[in-house]
Length: 136
Image (cartoon, rainbow, N blue to C red; front, side):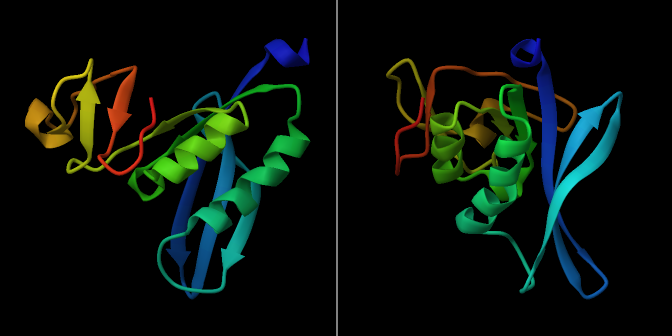
């Protein structure tokens, strides 16, 4: 039954006092339960290597489960998306409004041109994101 169970995790990083805490939490019944964390030896955002370091133990611990990872704008990287996809992990990574997307071989457009406002959600699938690297 394990392989059929879907688990949702959120990745987040915060500066708490003098510590830069990077954590991945299991989302269960509207609660975030910390599962694994790192204290980053610097201030500011995480990089791809640190993101992989945080997620790898999760893959071993929850092997056989279907995993969905949620990340805010800090985790908008195409390289992270490609790595997660290569590991068979489903993900939702919030994008910055300046991110370019292309749908159905149309011209690239910035997300901000879609007229989204706070509180409005938009789900788009099968797109190319950014002009730098293709990811569908």
